[in-house]
Image (cartoon, rainbow, N blue to C red):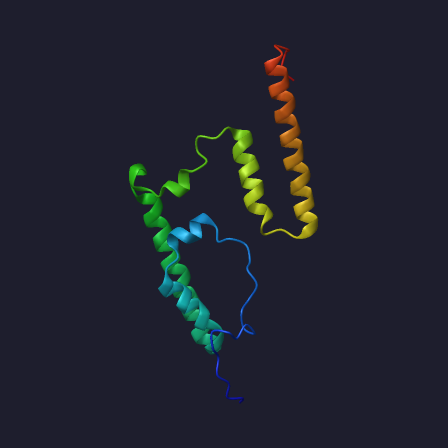
Length: 134
């Protein structure tokens, strides 16, 4: 095995930035869980299964606690789009999904987003001019 020193200027092992972490993950993840997840590939098969199962159980427990909390105690991030119109929520949801899609899927989402934008423009144009809505 090659003995190699890594320093701050060594960029060989840096990974490219990926999509942002989903809101739910930011609320249930912890540094400890991230550390456990990072060592799983270095364990033998049975250890990998056991540690992975423990990680998922802890995440499930945290998710249950998150949603069992009184509504006023729940994280604001869970309710950030609650007051938006259904069309706005749909657009925000599609934009969030887009980060995880292939280029072809992103193109389809962009088509939907353009449609919603165009529909919204027509809707406001009709409302401003007192014309019947579509």
